[in-house]
Length: 294
Image (cartoon, rainbow, N blue to C red; front, side, top):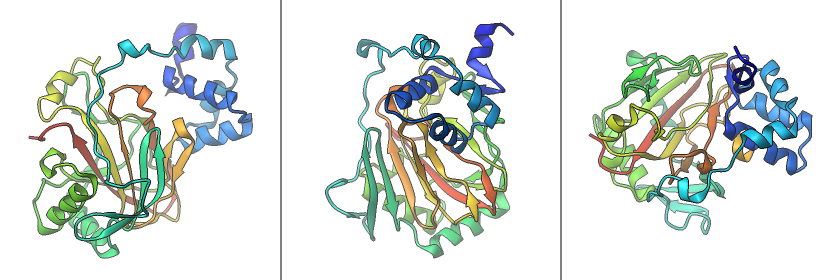
């Protein structure tokens, strides 16, 4: 492996331009090595790879973390966003009110309290258990699916509207976010056991990848993600956002929502599931598309 290749992939973890740009920003903001090391480890990096990244000189980071000129960015898409978010604590979700306990503008992100009841969370788990298998990710090279070593969970998908429970939750999400039910992918339930994780990644489909064109035929780009927590692991399992140094701790019935109007790292929506230390973590994920998902 050449020196350049090693600089971009150390210890089997990608050191992307977005990661380097994040590190440069954090250093400029005054965060020290110990704080940065903790942020990287919380985001799913192993200790050796994190220390290798932190050892990079500022000149190397500046050279590789080039900012894309605005004219070269993908065009912006409309995205979901709850009415009055950032203005009111309680948001209208149709059949209930949901509290927005954290609100960010860049990226557009909300931590929501009480989106699901404990009974609904348990019902989703019970319905999902018989259908669980190793989680797959979208293969952007072909448009199909693949096993990804960065994702070590088990999961399954519900068909949109396949039960009264699913229809009720989908209607609630639609009312809260102001986005049509038909523009949502099927609800995915995931289980992360001890040690399982999902390393930092983006949810949009990279326009530069060869398989993206076929993926977009089913409903256009993904424009938002809603992660709902169905239980509380004993330790670990936070949803981490390295670009904004945010960690959302799982709490049963709560959720984190974020949108991305441009399929590009400029969206600042790099996120991952930190390793579960003990217990199980159950989540339900809803991805929203720009058009009807078929």
